[in-house]
Amino acid sequence: MKPNKKKARNSDEREFGGALGATCIPVFLPLTVLYLLSVCRSPAASVLQWPPPLTPAAHLWDPLAAVLIGGWLALQSFLYLLPIGKVSEGLVLRDGSRLKYPINGFHALSITAVLLLVCFWLGMPLGYLFELILPLAVCAIGVSYLLSMYLYIRSFWAPQHALSLGGNTGNPLYDFFMGRELNPRIGDFDLKYFCELRPGLIGWVVINLGMLMKEVELRGSPSLAMLLVNGFQLLYVTDALWNEEAVLTTMDIVHDGFGFMLAFGDLAWVPFTYGLQAMFLVVHPQSLSTLGAAGIILLNGIGYYIFRKSNSQKNQFRRDPTHKSVAHLETIATATGKRLLVSGWWGFVRHPNYLGDLLMALAWSLPCGMSHILPYFYVIYFTILLIHREARDEKHCRAKYGLAWDTYCRRVPYRIIPYIY
Ligand SMILES: NC(=O)C1=CN([C@@H]2O[C@H](COP(=O)(O)OP(=O)(O)OC[C@H]3O[C@@H](n4cnc5c(N)ncnc54)[C@H](OP(=O)(O)O)[C@@H]3O)[C@@H](O)[C@H]2O)C=CC1
Ligand SMILES: CC(C)=CCC[C@@H](C)[C@H]1CC=C2C3=C(CC[C@@]21C)[C@@]1(C)CC[C@H](O)C(C)(C)[C@@H]1CC3
Image 1 (cartoon, rainbow, N blue to C red):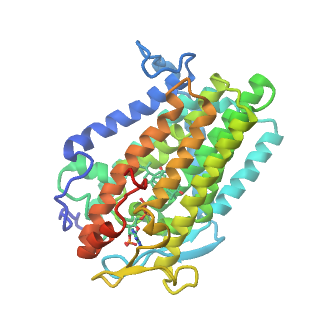
Image 2: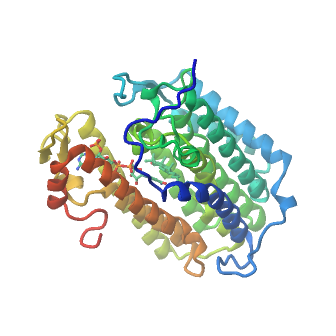
């Protein structure tokens, strides 16, 4: 078969700072991961510390880390391929076809949990993940580079209709970053869908558990702050896998190609930066009052409620607008035939799910106290990510729905936070 060198339609609009952004981000973000992990483990844990507490190069590599990352990817791939759970269809593609996806992420999480219990029972030192964290991150970054290179090269053999609209400008660095192919597959194995929810997301809570075990080794029992961070983030990951089918309609699966941005985001960024709070707590123990803990649990509960209810309402509405839980909601028609909700959660702000997610992000950092900025890294990064994501989504929706989208924006003027943004 001849390589496909054509561009897909609509490919001249550049995102993420265009070619310059796409050149700098793949260098800057992996270094940021290593920097944050190094600072987090240092006694001062200050991002303003000068000189920064950089880890010597020799401590960045450990063959055990490579074995663990390889074994982890193999285990999660095996669980993905198990013929358990249902099979769902994705949205209709440009050629009119629909891909099939296994919905067994929750099974994969449960089996992983049982395997971890066995490891614990066998006396394996899970707390050693704390010592190994930098070599593990280096290997995960290496895997995301290798995977992105493979994805970029193989995309030249993909048919035209299988290319993403955003990642085919002809500029190799930009296309490598954004991803040329929309749904790269090896047989039935969907690489993007697999990476989005399995190795990184489940890896994140396993690393958190490792930090908890390290705290037990050091202090005899886990602190309340550590239990809250572990519990909140486990709830978030469990929710994502329980509602796995909903991922099939997200921007990442439907619109974005699979390139460095998502490969690195899924495999390295999520597991090694989203859990910085737990790592921080190992070196910087915090005492938390019962009242403080109750307030934080309430905040996480409110955030989770808004996040889950709003996401479920939209998913239900998109799947079956006549369902009794959504049939009563006020909607506006669009030229595409699809309707937009203008009451219920989606009449409150235009992205109620982002609001809930942000409240949870704050609740994950508060157990770490107020003395350091580092455990608040996730809230700060996530606010920037969601503001940027909202702007991207808005652009797509305006292009898709035209005047109806403008009407929606007039009816629901605030994007994420009522009366503020
Ligand atoms: N933890 C993390 O790192 C991240 C978490 N997230 C979370 O993932 C979840 C999904 O987010 P994301 O994929 O960005 O997008 P959304 O789930 O917010 O989906 C946006 C899409 O919803 C549809 N839509 C928008 N407004 C309406 C309306 N009024 N009525 C009906 N449909 C509407 C449109 O698609 P259409 O009309 O085509 O159906 C739009 O493109 C969120 O909860 C977010 O917080 C996201 C990114 C990172
Ligand atoms: C800095 C950088 C490289 C960013 C890349 C962005 C990715 C880290 C995120 C893009 C969208 C994501 C989603 C989730 C995790 C982070 C990434 C991959 C998600 C799987 C988290 C759990 C949620 O419940 C979710 C399933 C809705 C969500 C989907 C989007």
